[in-house]
Length: 528
Image (cartoon, rainbow, N blue to C red; front, side):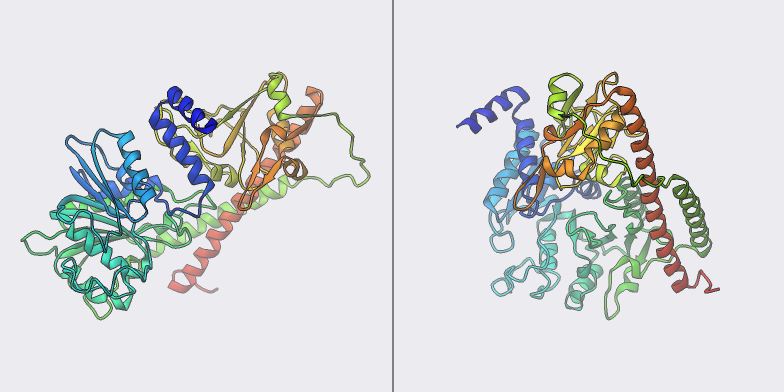
């Protein structure tokens, strides 16, 4: 009862949609292994590839990310199905709270018990389950959906592809997220060949590592169109945007991915062809793919970047690495005094400082109405620029300001980040706490530095079976005069700069090593 009363009060204050999104976000954060999520950036790209549509189907809707990414239009109808009753209900409610569009949700195993057998949609968006052996191979042998061939037991993804095509109207577009093996497994080559011959498969796009779970595999997007009576398309678009994988835990460079993919797709759609873009994209005649393997992996068919470009880029990385290593040597901290005794400072806690007005505490997770970058916990941990998104809400977002200190509360790490001018103005994401110190009472670098102490974090953390959660209010600080705070703050700031330079040197070193291996093996770099 207290929980229900709390939810009702939150809904009365923030609105039903914002309350639902808040609670859903907390549930997904607490159960990361229970759901296979489609990141919002990827969902948006898939919806843009499909184009404007009045009727849209997601036959494996999960939490509804793909249908939420569809651009609303008058008289639109959204269809969703999922084998998990709780997910089907969640998606239907989520969409109903977001839009006035007609939403038709259904429960059931889509391949075995299609809830929309008469539907002819303008678009199908789908993130199907991967590598399913028990998808209905034995009982669906004579199903009319297998227009392009009966999928092997190991080819569940090609069953989903054909289901999507069967639910499209003539000329309708389907965009599916696929494992890369589906483009080259020998067991699926006959179906791939027929998709090509009949003009159903229009594009294969290799995404960067980290685009969607499983994050260690570079997944593909397949763009398909239900053939009209006209002859099939003579060329297929192949795109590889793996180079935009991003650094550390920051995720892909989604802006570069979107720009590259959508530009290539629109040119290909408009003209039926695309001139070679070395290392990125090309249109290939269907006949060139119809060999014994029918291998559709873009990397196997794209011309490599030009030798001059590769060597020039490698030289630039090497020069930047040299400069960074020289800087790291200059920033290396001086040796510590082995004879110093640890002082016994009087201590206070973040909770006490907040109650006394020395700082303000805020928690993140609301998107507000302004479309601004979102600082995520991964951005804080990896020291990268704001990279996330949050759903719009009526509740105002917490925007960062220079001098704020941001602390992640999950994961058990000892991290605190001081917001600078470059990061200011971003919305605070989920699982982050913002501390805004009174500049007359607390030095922000002093505050951030002491929050990073390992022992400090350990005593303020609670431990569940799957995660460590930090109670920021229990973190401790010494009570020091402001001048002494600034002395410590200057040292902590120098350490932060040293850490940033080391992190950057590591990333440059990885680029140089990878580039040297590539150059030596493709002949653009000589061994001596």
